[in-house]
Image 1 (cartoon, rainbow, N blue to C red):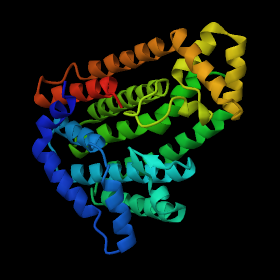
Image 2 (image 1 turned 180 degrees about the horizontal axis):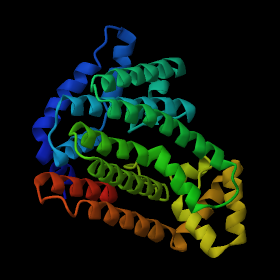
Image 3 (image 1 turned 180 degrees about the vertical axis):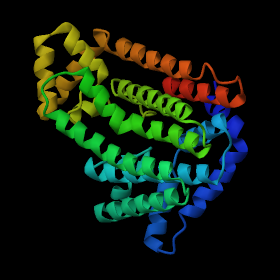
Length: 324
């Protein structure tokens, strides 16, 4: 099913307006910066996060200039974080093309990321909405906190699902939550509905990250990263954590400790991946993901049956059913 078309349908006009608006926010007379921006925009994706802002605003009211500025700020902040992440992770590829640091260099990538971040702050300031400005400002803190928490968790030799969810809430879900909350705030709805919007976005983000983590247990060129990439970086995600805690297998635990210490061989990582798959790790993570999807859908239950509501439901379907 073409979920993206279902998502776009109720906001098609607003999305076209946003794209033109977003393009204008990125114009620069600096040739090097323009080249970097052009490179990023070759693979800028489907605009999934701005669409979430627009849908949320329209669910609770209408899309207004503050909505567009908020959506632009969040997309710019997200893009800046990806550019910086590729430098930190020494990644050479992003969305199937060479990363900014690979095409240019680390200095250019960091400074370009800084420019995108500064532009995000300009855009959020133009909302003239203190609640949205506060939201985006705190989001920058939360994203950095999430990345640092994940790094510190590598040295934590406990196999804790609670810590895993703490990381993904701060590292991934907080951005989706900011999108839905910003949309609701721009529509000037009541505090209760703003919180419903925020929670809906958080549940989407949790589903999104669990799905990403499941991908890491399978080889696929379409996904765009090799099997076991998370473990190569010292990360144990939900499928493996569940199996480690449910089986208490000594060999698997020893390999898991090596993974966290960055000492596991390719063969050991392959063994732990296969062990996880054989002992129900993928099924467990999938079940948890669908449980969060149902929680998110329940938040929409009281909303009128409009095309916007259908679009948000399709957004959830897209997140859990996507192939990459």
